[in-house]
Image (cartoon, rainbow, N blue to C red; front, side, top):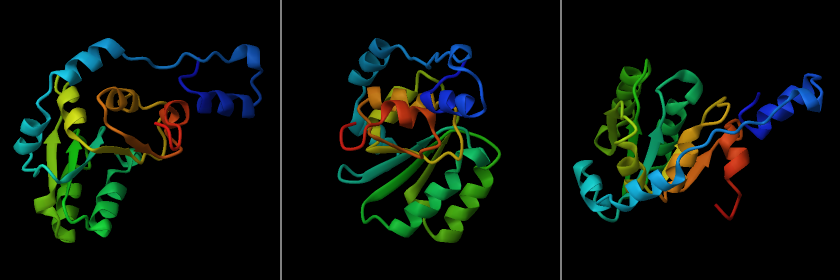
Length: 174
C-alpha cells in the first residue's frame, strides 16, 4: 500500500508486480479546509506576524527535521533578499534552535518568524495568510500539507522528492 504515484513507481522499480502495489493516496476533508479558509481574516493574521500588506510571506509548514530541509529554505530566502519579504516557519522539531541561530548569523532575524507547533485548527489561518508555501524535503512519501495549503489558496513549491508534488502540482497550472 503506497501513498503516492512516486512511491508506486519506486515499488515497481524494486520488482514488485503491479498487482501487489495498491495506491491509496492521502486525502483531506476539502469542504472543511475551504470553509475554514473562507473565514480567515488574512490581513489580521499577517499583521500578527508583523507583515505589511505588500510583504511577500513565504511559509514552511512541517516538522523542523533534517530531511524536510528547512535550512535550505532559510538560506535561499537570505540569498534572495526580497525587498518586502517575510519567512514564516510553522512547526517544531530538533532544528528549531539551529535555524534561529542561522537566521541571526545571516542577519535576517527581523524577517523570520517561528510560530512553533500549530495544531490543525490553526493551519487554515496560517496557509491563507501566506503567499507561498515551500516544502523542500529530501523525501516525503506524500506531504499532506501540500493538499491543505492549496485548499486554502496558498500556492506551493515543493521538491520533486515530495509525493504530493508529483500528484497535485501541475507546472503552470496549479
